[in-house]
Each structure stands twice: as C-alpha cells, then as structure tokens.
Image 1 (cartoon, rainbow, N blue to C red):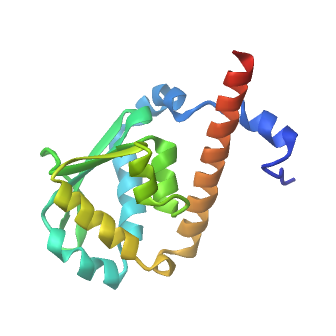
Image 2 (cartoon, rainbow, N blue to C red; image 1 turned 30 degrees about the vertical axis):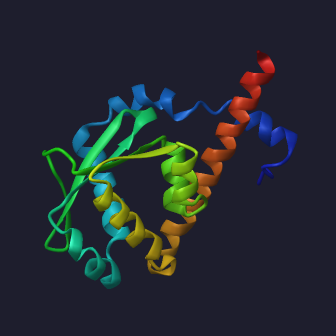
Image 3 (spheres, helix red, strand yellow; image 1 turned 90 degrees about the horizontal axis):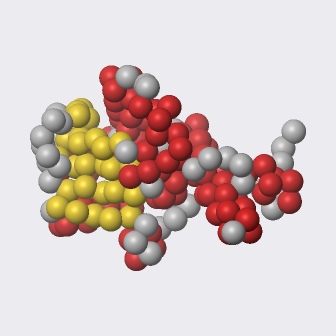
Length: 175
C-alpha cells in the first residue's frame, strides 16, 4: 500500500517519525567498525566511476570531513590511490549538516548553494578545498551512480524531508 505524501493520513503518520537526533542513542550501539564499513561502501560506490577517479586526483591525499550534527557522527576521509580511506587525522575541510540536509544534498533534491545560504550546511577549514570538492560533485554525471543508489538516495531524502516537516508542524500545532 502506498501512502501519498500530501494526504492528511500520511502527514499524521509522518509527524510521528522521530527526528534523526533521537536515533543517536540507537546508533551509538552500532559498532564503529560496522558504521565505517557501511559508510565506506556507500561512498566507494558513488566514487567508483572512471570520471570520478580522474577528477578526484587534484584532491588526492587531502582530508575531507563529513559531520552529521544531529546524529553526532563525524568522519574524515582521504582518497589514496583511487581508494577512499578513513583518516585519524584532522580534516582539512569539513562539511556539516543534519542527516536530512546531507541526504537532500547527496540526492540532488536540494542545491548546495541553497543549503549553505539558508545556513543548513556549513563548511569549515580550507574553504578552497571544500568548494573544489563541491564543484566536482556538482559536475558529477548523476547517471554514473548506480540506479539503485539514486533511487534510494532520492526516496530516502524525500521521506526524511517530509517527515521533518510533518514533525515540526505537529509540534507547532501542539504548542
């Protein structure tokens, strides 16, 4: 059974989906090694195309951080010989945002400039490195990502965004 997102029943159901910040406790119980394995696999699939490998060469051995503020997650990555690695060193540039906003960015349902302008994403550290990476990702041919990844990203981001809006509306209505 499919629920249309604009129906009142769907909105009522979505309003009870807890925001990602409430998932933090459950996520803390997942071993770090398992978290890293999943994140690395997802990102490696996204970066697997020859186009990405070639265009990421200028930032090889540079450390990029991703911080998911509401889930209290932070990873630092570096490309080393066409392989994405976790780094224990401090990031040279870090992009931070909520899980929903980072999903919206990754799924291309929201533009990076819009998210930064609305202060829903932040870039700290070496801004030039961060902007270079953002420009590379903007130029990434969307069709080079596996279809299953594109569908999962867009549906997951859309669901998270609708759930966030419904949850906020329910809280505002209750106040």
